[in-house]
Image (cartoon, rainbow, N blue to C red; front, side, top):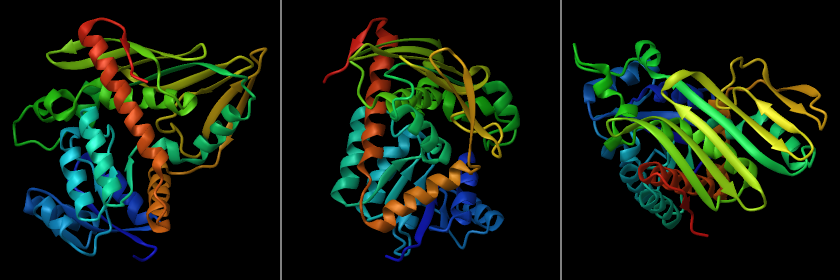
Length: 346
């Protein structure tokens, strides 16, 4: 394979447009094809986004020998099927988060990619940015002392979001009926959609599974519209988070250590791309503002993925972190449904 990774995209979800632009702007990747179950829609999407090839089925794209990797922005309930199919065809996989809808499916995805010697990465973008590297240096250097608490909140006000970003629906259809976030069988719900970021932030800091968790949710039918959780780790460490579809836009975390703290009020995606900032506070709570190099996080993610694919050296830390996040989500979901603390197996 050449050093340029040739991508195909399975599906035309809203996020696919943003990632397609990043692939086209990257130095390591090229966007070669788009696939949709609607051939006419695939043709129109390819024309609008200047993609050379289009396919009327996902299988046809996977059969194309010129495609090295696929991006999977399908609903979470379809991630396992199409990731394992892609891996069987020797395609590397960049898959939208959450990795899947269950631990068992996530494990099958990881195993399929290992067996076929292809890279798997979930599309949590902020982890690949210069700001992430800058924040990690403050956390890992001991400047904050021993990290003891992680607190995070991520949410969107879904009604406003749907007005501004309506899903593709038949004329006159209710957009709520086509919004995957509101469909439990497709993997919807606040925990798996935005809670994934909160749990991922705790894992990024502690790099260990919690010993036990507690979750509580407000449900609309079978879908959790808001979710709050507590995670207990060994060594007097804790994390807490709040997420939901019924609150104003939030995307912040705080890391509190024995000698200081770090706060980022937009870790999921910068409010201002040109001023990607965070703050540290010393033991006396004196603040210092830090501004990282401007960077498009979608592009950072694509370049990092392409580097792993082109090098031939599989990056295992990404999939291990995704699996741990999936396991924590499952335990929290069980906790909320059963209204009790759930222990995680060690």
